[in-house]
Length: 281
Ligand SMILES: [Zn+2]
Image (cartoon, rainbow, N blue to C red; front, side, top):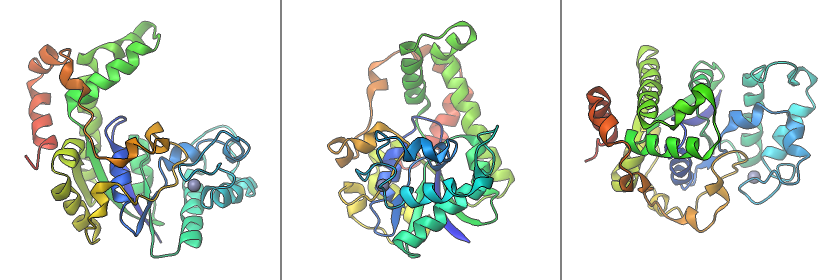
């Protein structure tokens, strides 16, 4: 049975920064979005000189991803034929086993794979003893960042909907509700937290997470000074040494008014947001 900490969230919800904070604990190491790596052929990473791990090495030379991906590549039964989701759990097991062989059994890996499907894959895997941390970000911040991204891309037809704040607020609501309902229906022992609580009440929030994980709170965690990670796929922040050093809140949505009226017309979402995001306030 392999230990694992899985941070699940919608995209752009602060999972990279939360994983960096947790990876500041001397027993934890972040591996970023593991499923996104495993959904590709191992050679895609191993043969690419530009596929950099956040440890600074290429995938091929990284002391965790290198041997893990080579083991997967050497197992013909795990080759991707038609579906990217084939044998994901078997490959996942190889990553976790390699991780513990390299860094020892007293260390635990952190996965920041997003997506509801990934949450289910981890929670239902009998070989993984997972601790799930479910992370949310303020609906207005999420909708503002998602519409900004959609508007920067040249989308056509129905995909243009993604440029609407109204659409993104509804997407936020149903995406988070689906995860919360699944966690509660399946009686999964998960800890719920938010990017806002992490930034505005850092110490109390991280102490709560440590308590859930049955770990001691270590002061260097919120300073982000000794964070230990091997992120092959994830937020570009992983490679930005300077930005990595502080727990500063991304407040761009406050200077944007697009969410004002859609938020006012969606009282259910407004209430849901208040209830789940500002627990420490
Ligand atoms: Zn690495």
